[in-house]
Length: 442
Image 1 (tube, rainbow, N blue to C red):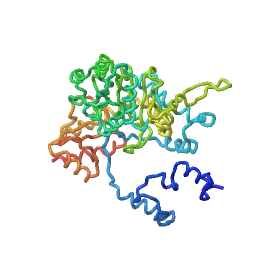
Image 2 (image 1 turned 90 degrees about the vertical axis):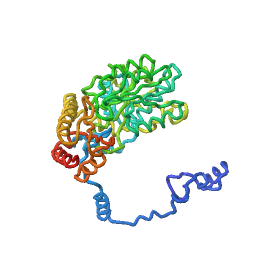
Image 3 (image 1 turned 45 degrees about the vertical axis):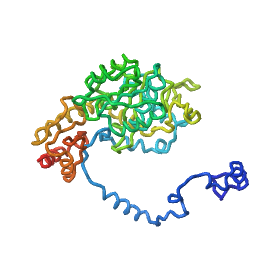
């Protein structure tokens, strides 16, 4: 007999009464502190509708969304995702799979995750990569807490670029709040790190120095090796933020002294979702047992055949609480699967071709924007990847509003600066965008 006739509460009334008595509670509701306004009162108050009526209701609601062509970037990059990824990733054995704890029934999924990790290892030059980070912000937070655990000296400062995306900065600060670690910004100059100013800031109290390439403003960081040297002289860890597409043409971060590489791998395999992604996390082998989340490893079965299994899946996060290395308790396996599928579909040459397009298309669009009266682009005299800021004589908010009215979306990043992202998905819309900008910039 189950309580209340529910198969999901497999206790008898007598057992429930005994448990409540042991903890001194009158009934089950006393175990929870749920505000009156959000308590379930037994009625959902959702009228019953037919499938046809529900579809009409949802379509009507969605039709209220603005139909804009997005020239948006700043961490969310809309590359074309091949239909192969959609069809294969939606197979039931992938879509309904939970964490692949049982290797005997998940070899295909585990192999795909192993290939994803191998891709990151090859692109970053580091020895270890995982497949469990929620997004770039949480990956950066995990890099900072890793630094707090492994650095020999008793430092308490994490240094990040002044241009760091606000959401990533806030997540990082939340991560380190319980570790007596502070986050400070170092200056930028013309879209890149001011290495001299950074060098003056770094001291023996510095845990971690973080730099991005490309930066949030799309500029390639030209002195990444010098930043790594600054961190190394202070015995601080050096973390680099990037993404798999950019890494396919940039120098591997390990070659410039990076100890950890973070970022968002969802530049591949995932349509733009503004918040949904998968965090990239790779590090040196010396930190293997400090890696958060889960790793897929290759082994051999009883017959000597190659087999895959979850290794170092740090279940301690569930049982060690404050002594755990990480609070990452789920994973992004299905998203990592999509990234691996997209990368495999492109192949090494295709991935490099995509990255080269990100350079040339940004350069070409910037040149067209620079020809518009009242606009100068790019703001920074740097190489850019995918995106670039442009200075406008009119207030940027007014220019962006007029562009929005014409059906185009851009970021406002300053009083007189907008940011424009060029990916293959907007190639056919660029003529119309430039024409709209000519009107908006007047």
